[in-house]
Length: 294
Image (cartoon, rainbow, N blue to C red; front, side, top):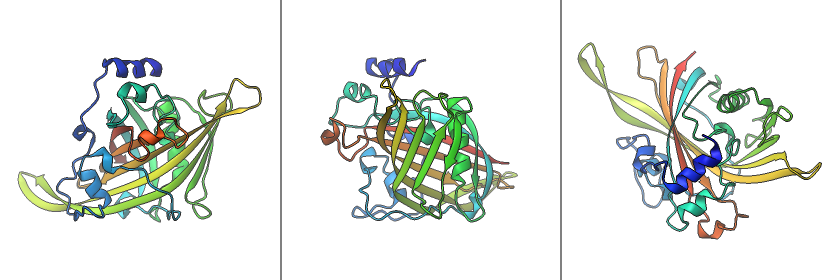
């Protein structure tokens, strides 16, 4: 179904909107302290409430994200679209859906998930031995897989110089919605929590502790594409955040890792509706992840 028809179906109710709770991976039993004054990331996700996924105010540039040792290596990732919600209580759904500049409503408007709504997608991800993500590899893999063809010419990223900026250059005239994408990370959060895990091995139950790693990244994306005006690039600004949940592999060989990514889309300050919803998400998308070690 064409993306324009999908959006119209949302307005007409032909495609049902998922419930809030159905989008979240269960971290209800994770052993992390709740505080109404200062919620940790796991506690925010545990609330299953989009209103706590507020956009971050840019302050001090965040440091490079580090990942648990059990994520090190190359993984074959199977991603499945779980659903979406339009959580705003201030902006009617039909007005949200009619705004095509909201991240996720057009291809490439969320770089890492370049085709929101694609039912399934398979690609590779790599986490380096120094506990960092191989973003040059991962972004190229994910974008090409979501679009269904070889679209990326080059990914430019130097974490030592600036861990908060990444550029994607597309093959010329290959992708209608993007010639170049610039990503700026405004904030990051991460937390490692423990959750009880019952391992039923040969009929004998053994209770263990499973590590769950949650991390978030608040991104401002600037997308440049061709316009109808000769020699003038079209520029679209978008603001969104990814909230990843990764579960430690508990199989005998540590070869299967499961997870989820919630993506919260925010209004840009230049959007006419911005002051109706300046910090809370107007759309939240959810994808389930099963990763197998290569």
